[in-house]
Length: 453
Length: 177
Figure 1 (spheres, rainbow over the protein chains, first blue to last red):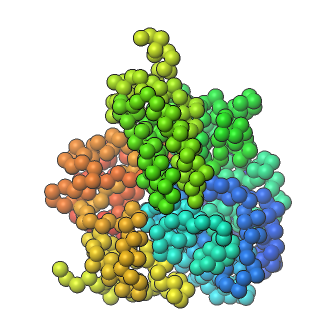
Figure 2: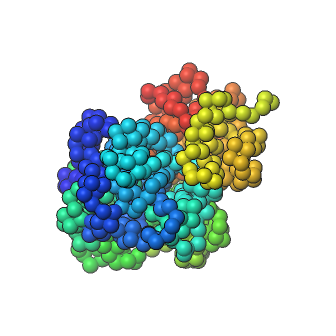
Figure 3: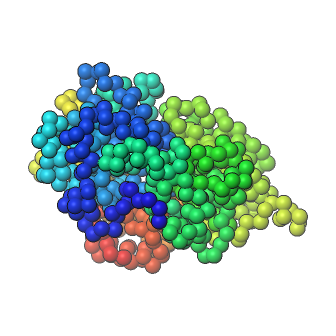
């Protein structure tokens, strides 16, 4: 196992409680920051660390913090995005359930750096039992003097609250999340202004993912320069990966960025290889929104170099032959998985989750779902595949928020890399209309099947 | 129908929730209060319930309706005592979510979206619940049931029926499978 930062003490009994967490070095970053550093010095360390947003976009966290309007007279807010809803992603839930205090600690240290006096953790409503865990951890932190008035006897005071969502993927988009936190529908806002200037209650606001905020503790403790030494190139540090699908050991793994993808999939330390002794067919590497890649392109780049678990390596080749690290939702499909059906479930998801503000997304996701449904159920038409490509193109880049892109990319990439499987669905409706799911007979590439006709 | 009103304890909880936000920003309490209200009033939000929440927050009823209708966790129609929500998105599908849904339909004698005649179970399919590493899975109230098999589903149905509790997002009713 490589370097463990967030999950170092995951197996310590009672690590979910304040006392045990504290005994293992917990809340040290709060002490260090509040007693020996200015808020700007904390921000500086986060900048130096090269930490990139762990929610999916990968934007440098320190830079995001530096955009915060510090001249405004209005109160500032830190809001934690725990609306984890990207299919294939469950790392934040794991972290909050097992080590809730690392998030609370990160919230205090980060809120201090940003000058926030009130902060919120917005958790997706379905994670109601996680909300109870966080509320209990917050109660403990108040009781021990790490939250509330004059934390550790300093001038700094902070109140921290947990906010439940109501079940909407779109609220993972930061401006939709803020709308939701204000008690409204989760419709993303037009930008600018960005939240750093006008966020929650039109006040300067930073929204960061759970893992990003939790990582701030380690950065303050070890220093930004030290943290930047971990990982590879501009992909500094470690990343939590949620591994799911047809692998022997699904679960959450902390990896040092730069780990070869092949090792991650086949090593017993991580995914443990493909289940049932089967072969791998495809991988969605960063949550459902990122382009799907066939086995040969996920293991090696188009140039033939080993593909690494890093922001740069996974996106090598752009969308022609690469993908994205995204949220780290790593979904593996074996040779029996039907790419069309999997894509249909994703597209149904985006259609369901579109907020409906922008017509390309509201209508386009519905069209794509409908066309994929008929392809999968043996009613596909000639021309459906080009129609899908066309609709995806018309959504991409034409919406207020990235949900439209997130819906378009999986469609475009699945057709780019597995076009013959879509053609097979059009040509052999009888063979594909079996409504059953994954135990389809291993897929016969269209060319081979046609040769036998 | 009796008047829609929180019990004194629940009302105190609602007041504590409202205090989490700056003055004048009480509307922020809407989503949490709708969860509280749904749990208090039989697992769904009637127009009367929503009007009551609006009055607590001093906002217009339409502001509540438009929010309640946007988010999937709020039920705008009555549901069975146990709302079974089976995840059907890609990662769960890859691990056999279809089998789980089919098994529920067979065992309960209803289709997705329907409620059993005794009012005990409503079956629903939902999109990704963030439990992909423990797929297939379902949510019933506050509880996640993971790594499901058809045998586990049989046990769950039996135990939920025996416990006879209403499932709500606010309180665990976890059954050992």
